[in-house]
Structures are given as C-alpha cells and as structure tokens.
Length: 436
Image (cartoon, rainbow, N blue to C red; front, side, top):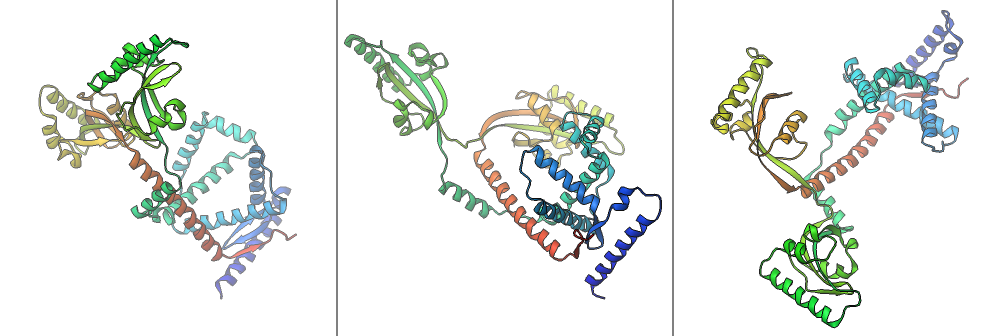
C-alpha cells in the first residue's frame, strides 16, 4: 500500500476513534463538540487547539495594538503554524529530542524570576489573564523541544568562514565607513569683549609664549590649568571625545586636518586666542576593554578528596606562596589545569566575561599582585593572582564577532526556511477546517 494512502487510512481511523470517544462516557458538551480540523502525518489538530492558538494570537495583537488581518487569512496562518509545529514535534519524537520536567521547571522558574515574581504569582497572573498554567507549561515544553531540534538540524551545521567575514566588512566599509572621534585639549587666552589694541597685544604675547613652551616639551594640561580661561581649565583643558559634528565650527576644519598629538597654531576669535591639541583620534566604533592578566592554581575533588579536603589542601598551597614560595613553581606541580600549569598557571590576557562568573568576580576584586583565598567554581577549587591590567582596543575582534553573528543569523534564517519547506512538502496533510 502507498505510504500516503496508509497515512490517509490512519487519519480516517483516528477520526472514527475520536467520534467513538465522543459517543461513549459522560463527557461534557464542550468536549463532544471538539473535532479534528487537520490530519498531519499520523497526528491530528483538534478544533480546541486551533481555537486556543487563535485566541492567544488575537490577544497578542491586541496587546501590541496591531491590526489583525482578515479572519480568513488569520485562520489560515494559525492553522499552518500549528501544522509546522506538529511536524517538528513529530521529528523531535522520532529523533530522541526530549525535554524532561526538570528542564521545564527550571525554565518556568527563570521566566518567573525575569518577571520579578514567584512561580506561584506567575501562575496566578496567567490564570487571571485567562491562560491555563498547565497548557502554558506544555507550550513551553514544545518551544524548547523545537529549539533543540532546530539547533541540532540547522544551527549546529551553519558555518561562517573568515573570507565571508572579510567580504562583509569590506562591503560595510564601502557603504559608508565610520566617523572619526577626536579627543581635544584646549587653552584659551581670553580678551575682553571690546579689547583695546594693547590688551590684544598682551594676549598675543602670552599665547605665543604658551606655544613656545609647548614646543619645548611643557605639559599641555599644566599650562591649561595655570593660564587658560576655558571652562575645562581645571581639568587640564580636556574637552573629551567628540565627533566632528560636535566640534565648534571655529575649530572643526583645523582639528580634522591635524594628526594625533599635534598642537594647532593660534586660533583667533572675538573671545580671545585658542590653542587646540589633538590628544586622541579613533573611529566611532572603537571598543576598549579592560583586560586582566592572571594566573591560577586549580584543584579538583576526587574519590579520595572531599570538597572540604580540597579547600584545605589549596589553602596550604596559598600559605606557602604567602610565605615566599614561587607561585609559578607551585602551579606547575599542583594545578590540575594542565593547559595553564605548564606556564606557571598563567591564563594570559583575559577579556571581561571570558571566565565563569565566580572566577570573574574573584579576579575583578583583586588588585595587581594580590592573591585570592580559595574559592569554588564548577571546575573545582581555585586560587587566582592578578598580575596586571590594561585597556585594550578590542574593536577589530568585536567587529569580526558582530559580522560573524550577522552572517550566521542570515544563514540560519535561510536554512530554517528551506528545512521547514522540505519538512512541509514531505508531509501528509489533510484539511478538515471547512467540514461540518
């Protein structure tokens, strides 16, 4: 028998079974009126499922103040969404993708926490708004199941090459590039509003002397603090970072032609004579992070060592370091992080967010040279020493990571569309929405 004919026969049997259930037993009128409105392979979509989904979609549209499409179009969209959901859940069941109650409970708790309510309060809110909590749980289970299925069949298979990133960034640059930002320092030798020739001459002499001192290596900030009448004189004349559009028109042409570190010639204005120094130049998409260079010693509990024993053993190692033993030597002989132990526990330069939260918290609290007390993470027990910190321009890495994610999401969207279309084309679907 042809597989499609077999599926059709199964659908008819399911339909008969449904009718039989409705004719037997003391069921309510509401359940007796429920009926099959679509057959999807060896499963069915019931009128109650459709009505529930339709109700939720309409509620969401109403909350977002969006105009709903005509009923005929909305009904088709909702039914098609249910069919696609059924097909994915069927594939998940056939390929062993399962979401157990423990995962579901954790997810529900996290949703409640994100909404700043308890799980009990969250349930009450749902039911007050007309949603069944149990149905919501099962809908959430389906969402997680489908997410895991798509991750396995789509997302994990999407690759982004370096050449694709290079091409993407080159295209972005051609389409507009980035705007520079300028960090300026300013000295103003002020003159009265209606300055006499003598007052102007005196200001000119002072300003020329400032330029001479700067050429001889005097500190710009010190001269600004002692001589400038500008509003930022107390801060060494620092005007901060500004885009070209934010620089006073009096200075903008001069500043944008300057090199980093360069000092301008005297700039005349009704308020006096100005001297500008370009102390920094960057593109507006620059991204600086504070990196930490650290080293650590890791010890793990095992069959012979409990958590308490491991903590005590590591505390003894720290005591030896405090008493003068070399950290790197002890890391090589005691640390169970073999990758860093060979380098004396050195982790290299670490960006914020790279380490697990417990490790990050301990590392952040330490000053260079300080060593933490033993602390625990999912990997075991650690002591960490911060060696040094620096501000690092992470712009290039950030741009490439952002480009990689944009390309990846585009590929996932395209692959998902093709995958769902194939899934839909290969399925047996029979519509009964218009049957009475």
